Amino acid sequence: MGWLVLISLSAAWNIVQVRQKQHDIYLQNGRVIFDLIVTTRAWNSQHGGVYMPVSDEVEPNPYLEVAHRDLTTTDGTMLTLINPAYMTRLIAELANQQDNINLHITSLNPIRPANAPEDWEAEALRIFEERVKTEYTGYAQDGDTMFFQYMAPLITQQSCLQCHEKQGYQVGDIRGGISVSFPVAFSMPWALLFSHLFFGVVGGSLIGVFGSKLGHTIKILEDLSDLDGLTRIHNRRYFDEQVKREYLHSKRNKVPLSIAICDIDNFKAYNDTYGHPAGDECLKQVAQVLKQVLKRPGDLVARYGGEEFGILLPYTGVEGALELGGLLCANVEALRIPHKSSEASAYVTISIGIATYTGDEKSLANVIKLADLALYKAKAGGKNHVEHMLVTRTVAHGN
Image (cartoon, rainbow, N blue to C red):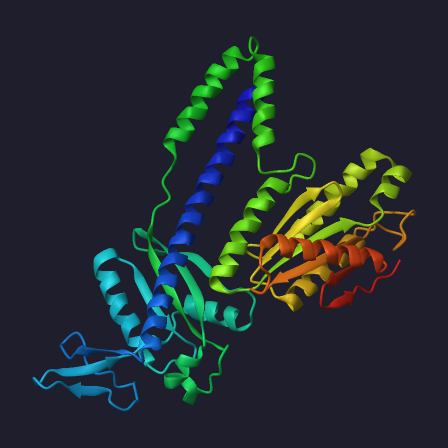
């Protein structure tokens, strides 16, 4: 009975993972399409636009107020200037006709009325302007078809001001976004279900004979898992993989990335005072609080080693990382786990060191080294606070 329950749970867990992998693939496709459109727009903008022959499909843009918008060649061919926004609309029409991919350039303050956002796009744009996150994803049902929705903001560049300066935009402002939606299908992994059914029946029959081998196999699978066996949060191996991936993404897209190392203050003294079983329970509680606080998409906490935790904060600059760090410190102390041997508080506390990648550091190893050094400074500075190499914020607390 226990074996069948285990197989059922494994099947359910794997189905969830399959769905998550499908979502990750859709997200990656959305990012790729968005990046291609942004790159194409940048090329157009750097060249001051491109000229195309006037036709039924390509008419002069009445919203483009620039000199020499329309030209006539020596052979009498009429040309009109295609700016980045107009080119995006033309690409969107072609993508929709050929691949059923919907592209929409939009803004809360559009020059062209037809670029006004749909409800979900308006919600995403407000989130972008509040700097809550830099990506938006969702799903929408249209008849019998499910669509994956992706949107990211457009940041005002110097070349954008040719058309948008009169709207009051400055370099660095969020002036709108591009949405991408395409049809998707969540298929049932029948092969996975049948394989679990097969192993459930066969395993149940052979478990008495091969019990020891099965236990050994389960242990190997647990060792290969991405989760830490004690705290049930992600382990060091998974953290290192995600840090490398986000570092390359940050470097490629020139967006900030903060990495933090967190350590439980005076944890050796805690073990000596209360015993190792209590220490294990302390690690579990702290791990779960860190996980609960870090709810933003992309945020990650993992057990880094011993009483240390690694924290990954994509799209997060210095101020945002310091705010999150302070919140983590406050929530851990709010657990009110007694720690009479602590030098910082009557309760268990943490210290956090943060380093933010801005494109200046030469390698990922440098960023992690800076975070480790910041943690050392936090420890030396009295513990129970957040330390950045450039900015320090002390967390107010009471016993």
